[in-house]
Image (cartoon, rainbow, N blue to C red; front, side, top):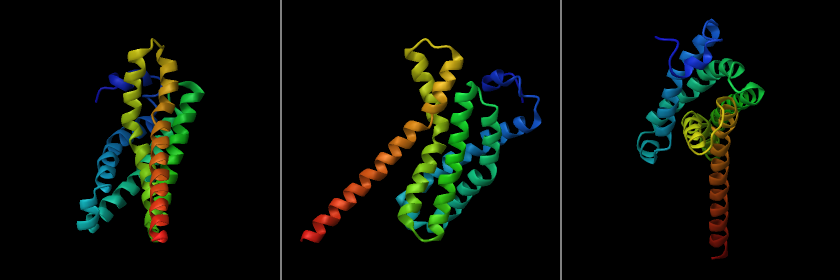
Length: 188
């Protein structure tokens, strides 16, 4: 593989560091699996009619993040572009990704399906940061003339913070709807 194309052009200072290079390739290729696996986990058809598949894919998703991607992404975060703001964003993203996925595993083992689903929603919102990070880069650079370093600092945060805010809104909205339904049922 060529080491001077795409994203790697901006990583020439690190490309010779074998732990970074290994982490890069591990993260890129295994995160693709997490994106697809997580997407299937929200299918009601798979969840209701194919529980064994749901569990199997869910386990693979969790192992992928907790054992494979967390360490790889942490190495990449330490060497991230964007100076301290960029590095900080990616370290926080990686720690939250691990934490939410871990909590989802713990909650399903406790048979707390609601908390499991909420933590999986948070985890997958962070998995989707791979896509939103690139989307925001295109959007921001399309509207504002900004140097690449500052764009990367902003983009590092925009890649995951809006995702988490949106998921928290969905979770809270569902709680409010469920609470209102419960009150109506109690009045009748």
